[in-house]
Length: 194
Length: 120
Image (cartoon, rainbow over all chains, first blue to last red; front, side, top):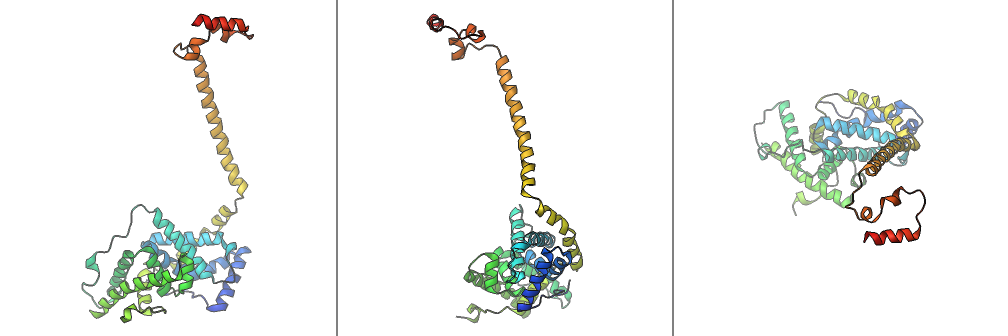
């Protein structure tokens, strides 16, 4: 299992300025500058794509599509705004496109027996098993709901940013996150209570 | 209203951490992924830099081939129709004497009139 984000983006105005500079250098033909952006956002992009698609390999394909699509559209990026939401919108769209093209869902519907029970050995296997259950629970949620909760609770984006990324009203984002959390927190509480 | 129904506007660190672990790629291949994206850097840019007229030209070449094929097919069908034996079952064939078709000069109006009267 990989560690947390290898290169966390700096925060606030410094982040925006730094990323605007990286974008400008990329547009000027500096390949390495784009490499820094990919390095920085790859973990996040892969998780967001996986939240949409479920399958890790397919998510990587979608995340790659997202990065390359962003590269091609880089001149359209507004340098006064944070780069992350702009990129994640493209990644989420790339993943959603893949999901639509997919003829057969690879993620099976949640087996009710998986949630809320079973043995819990006190080892790394517990985390792994919890991860499986969480992925299964995520797969049960409507795609927009699971994407919203991952962007909010995992990636730390604001409701307003998520609303812009998913092209939905901010109130809808709040509602989607609320419902997703209720389902996922119940699963976590069940695990902790056992 | 229970606590659960009160929406918390802050991220949930515990849920976030659990989801992060669940969604992180199964293999620690971050560097490989970055390399994979960067390997397609030039290809993506060159595909995007293709001028519009080149794209249109590619399509027009296909259009010319398709038009030529359609013209050839039409020519073949027309030629076959002209070579086919006369079919008296058609109204035009029944009303038009063969002499009119083969003639090089326009016929006199009285001849046309008399031939139509004869047909009846």
